[in-house]
Image (cartoon, rainbow, N blue to C red; front, side):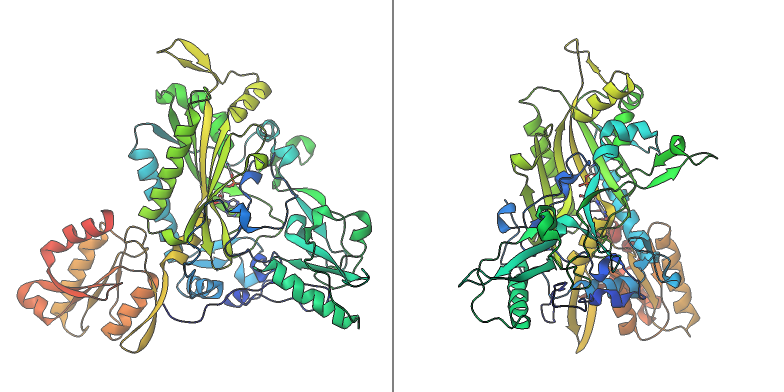
Length: 582
Ligand code: GAP
């Protein structure tokens, strides 16, 4: 990989009247307030900003100290070069090659929503099909489900989402921009010598919170025309910790002026809609913010009809919707996304859950590496006891080091019997399982591995992205695992003016496309065709040439090594089957 190491810097402060626009935005048409334009700030490489145990709303705890390294219990190798690319490169290739488009782009976009193009939909389908194959079909203890996106509002009351699925939000009354209070930081700037307070700075997390705050404090001092030394370290807090008096003094990141930020207030992230002809309070329903509740509410249905015995799991893939205050970092945090969730039901004894929990962490990790995730960029963030919801026994996030920072990719939580018990109490219907072998009834406990398809999609592209030079020419190559690659094989007739070659190539193409997504390309020099396939992440290309007509062999070119091998046409299917399906 080549190119300088760069990082997105998204810093706002009292002295910065013009916000730092993320260059990521340039890949898409100009979208006012698009999440990835930088309103939400970046994450800190080497640190984790946790959202995981905020999951399920009840524990979407707003107040959190500015992220520190200590949060990361097990981290990816700190020495690993994260990447020589940045989010701009990723967004660019996604747009250029038709992986991801901004939703409603011709209308200047729609913040927090994305469309997946021809290659994107293939990659997404590959992720989901492989997950289903490995988590459901290959296991005897798993079954699937597809529950409705809109369910009775009582589901969300029982689960705690109506009351508690909230993020703390502050508004800037002047710019009308909104910020997540726990992601907007402030600090008082005072002089060391006599404690004189110069003012306050406000900033979003840019990857070096303390360094940026230091710079801004110095600028503030200069602007105020003060002499002396600033008192360090700065006491940086997030906006949920601001007192009423401080609120009046903290500048808005958008305007640089104090006094326009509102106090933090709870903002429920569930999208509301109305069901039926009348739109009143009685018709209010919600788009699901997670697929998990559909699994819990169907526990008895699935258990009794699926003839499954505890321990067993129910898996579901489906859309989830969250009205995120600051959708950001491209598809990392969006308002509409897909989840792949498992609720794995286990007996209630205290000594039982740790083993299942640890096995699921291991299973999740192994699966991610098996589909081509870069293990050197992955880590584990074990949540501290004090950060867990009262009912939760443990939670571990598998984190990934994206170009904008290291953040949660997948959460694995031991949630006890909280959800089933809540629904049992609320609905009045028993959620008990009858253990025939031991002749006893109990509400099972649960281990919940949950991952976002879109977030994994982004992590896979980041894992695959590389730039190198072939014969003096720079190429972008997406080194997808063959099973993930949107196009598996490119088929090229060497020349298009020789009917026999065209016919032979077409026959190979027709045969392969019955099994795989393959690509036919007759235009341009072979080298150019290879480059196009490299950037799409196609692992193999076949060239049909004059020799093919003589000996029924073709050239198979491998994407990563660029190695070219001569192979009999009859051997192609077996070769690709081994390479792609393992
Ligand atoms: N049922 C548990 C649950 O929903 P979560 O941590 O809130 O837990 C699970 O979400 C996973 O869903 C996350 O690890 C992440 O991969 C994905 N996810 C959550 N919010 C997302 C968003 N706004 N955009 C994209 N993916 C998201």
